[in-house]
Amino acid sequence: MEIITTVSRMKEYVRGAKGRGETICLVPTMGYLHEGHLDLMRMGRPLADRLVISIFVNPTQFGAGEDLDKYPRDLPRDTALAQSTGVECIFHPDALEMYPVGYQTYINVEEITDGLCGASRPGHFRGVTTVVAKLFNIVEPDVSVFGEKDYQQLAVIRKMVEDLNMAVQVLAHPTVREEGGLAMSSRNKYLSPEERESALVLNRSLKRAAGRVKGGERSAGVIRSEVVAAIEATPGCRIDYVEIVHPDTLKPLETIESKAVMALAVRVGKTRLIDNMTLGV
Image (cartoon, rainbow, N blue to C red; front, side, top):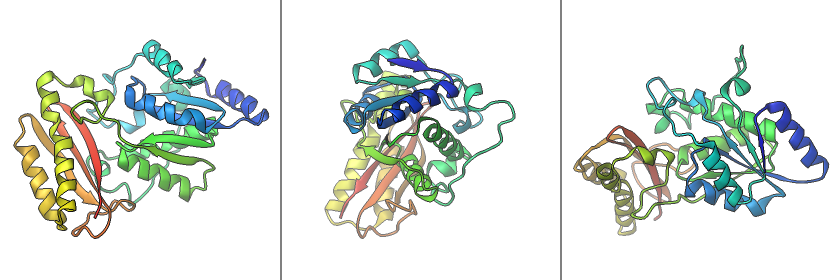
């Protein structure tokens, strides 16, 4: 397995693969890999001749006061885990390699980024779409795999690919959960044992909401109020948002007439966690 740290060398690697007629699958990550990341890689392994991952803690998607500096990093550990899934190349640039002195160009997907994490983390998705567009241009993947846990991110990237006519297929992998239902995240390491127990309310609330819809409840307001009450009653939890939205536009819904998505962000102690679930009629 090769670890590449420069854009020029990564492009050279891609030219070689393409010259041999090989296809490429890219799994973008910020590192500190967990089983959820590894499942994305396992999904991607049979989809192309070459499986490439990126490990890059992208500074442009972090806002002031967020955890950029303390975001967990462990390249030797990540390298061993990635290799175990069949990854053949890791693209691991530093910030200056991706954003050289004088860098001025950003990509902004409008409307679909207005709510949810876009409302509570201004500028976040501008950073996400910019770095993903750069990765797509550098690695030239035929297919790229993302997790459904970051539902809004997945929707935004798909919209960018569609609008900019990018030649990459974006595939989604279902959310991978720990025992008890907590969605896997690199930030879970911040949680104390007590906070981890409190965090289980996220998945329990989503499952309760899905059950209410299956039971015939159609009012998004009623279901949302029940979820808010459950989370607020849990020690250490502070709600950022709880919304029921259209699965494609991410616009808030008043009535659940077909499929919808309940998305939530909750601070458990100092750790911000997100989760979502499709609500089907």
